[in-house]
Image 1 (cartoon, rainbow, N blue to C red):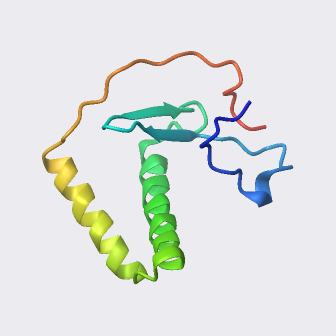
Image 2 (spheres, helix red, strand yellow):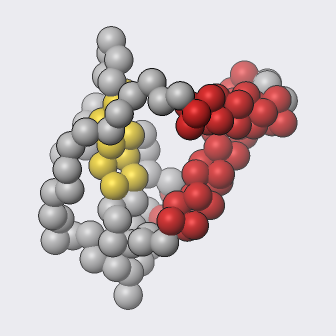
Image 3 (tube, one colour):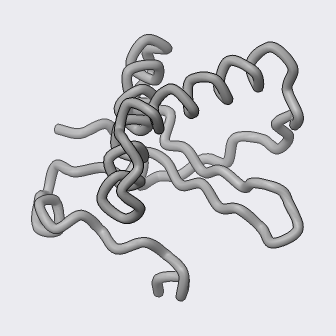
Length: 107
């Protein structure tokens, strides 16, 4: 059963049998993030870097579509915050890997 605040699945992959969800990020009221990752699908660190850049571009596009903010301005803000957080982290990841039999590599 989906969580009541779970974002909708992208329509193009709704019936795609080879599609895999690889990340979920939850923010808790009052602070804190909870993350779930499928690491078996994307093991290469460079692939994660590409994914993060593409995610930033999607966020900038969404910001443009919903608030009219210039895409390049959003991307610059995201990159500046990324670099600041990289240099001086405000949080330290905790937790561990939980095996998931459904996280097999796509065939």
